[in-house]
Image 1 (cartoon, rainbow, N blue to C red):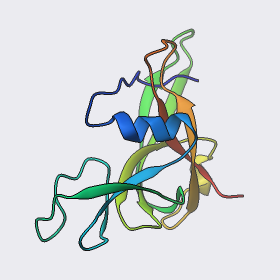
Image 2 (tube, one colour; image 1 turned 180 degrees about the horizontal axis):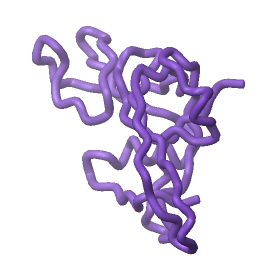
Image 3 (cartoon, one colour; image 1 turned 45 degrees about the vertical axis):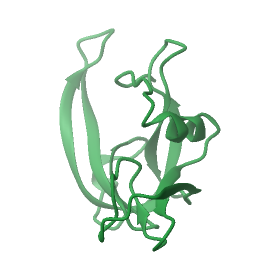
Image 4 (cartoon, rainbow, N blue to C red; image 1 turned 30 degrees about the vertical axis):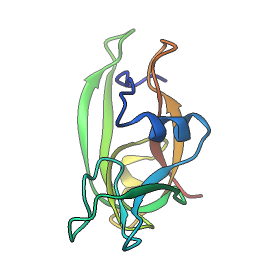
Length: 134
């Protein structure tokens, strides 16, 4: 299953090096140890010296929405499930939920990251999608 193709740039290269290895990386400020999302430019007090740290890849669903789509190879309607997941480390992450039934979605649902290739090209990166913890 491919999603919207994602291609790295210099700011995201290290993050995508991690996803290619099946590792979810977050940024941590060297001075305070605050954990931030990969796109953060500074922490809550303005520190900008970061290091990449391995995250657990686990979290809980905060909110979600169903986005109607059509399958690329048929007229069968699909429902893409987009969600906000609060990672165990603290940051909130916009993501797609996969392998979950509509009736099973509840706030607080425990989920974990799985890494999926975003497109067919060799330049398309692996991205974290989330599945229920079973």
